[in-house]
Image (cartoon, rainbow, N blue to C red; front, top):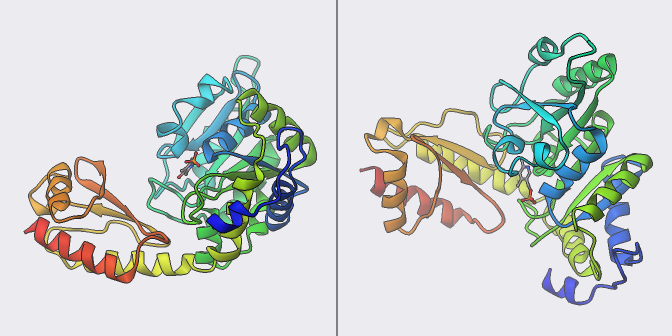
Length: 325
Ligand SMILES: *Cc1c(COP(=O)(O)O)cnc(C)c1O
């Protein structure tokens, strides 16, 4: 990847003259079945740029309550897009068409204008769950019926695609705008590509510039992302297998519970039965050489990725056995 970056052809990205960025954009637009695409430094900027195009101040975004949008984006929906966000309660980060329909008020002069259905594929805090195509189809139908758009936060869209054997373009058929992140399981140091119609992407380019996201020799970054598409997609299945191995081993440790089915590369770990708080376990795990994300008073989150081998999974299990004892 470093060699690909070093050898990248470059131009002025801000002036739309970087050939490697063009190659990446074309490739992702094609992958996601969209007319146009935009290269951005991060997924967070892809989300906020999309909101800025879809929403006028006061418009409503409907998203699952555990979405990244609500917890890890510094309130960008309110702060930068001026949008009202409404949390929907689902299961594993996935809400049903019924839950959504119940929140769609009849249009009225004094009601906020519902504008955007927000789908996180896969669900991050929800535990890496995959929105099935039939659920997504129902979201698409509701959007059509009520004049809304669908946005897909695809930070782990490629994990969903690999796990459910669904072509990424199938998600592009459902979502008006969607993006993939290159810095999660795909293992690049930066980059996200947002895709949509030509008009949408023209608006998103303005938003990106307003946010200070335009670059110069962006091809150095895009080359890393192209490398990730070439080398790091098929192997996501290995991450999913290792996450299941980890979950299976953890479930065998007394007091530890895995509350959700492990569909992709995220494992939520319920520690309530160990008699120790999750924070205490984190500290004990660290003394055994393992750092794990604290996720609540009795929850941890583990993620497998291209830096984690079978030996690492075995090491993690041994650390858990020692720490939980
Ligand atoms: C990581 C993540 C983002 C933000 O992506 P960055 O590239 O880190 O800015 C957005 N949504 C979800 C679900 C994520 O996991």
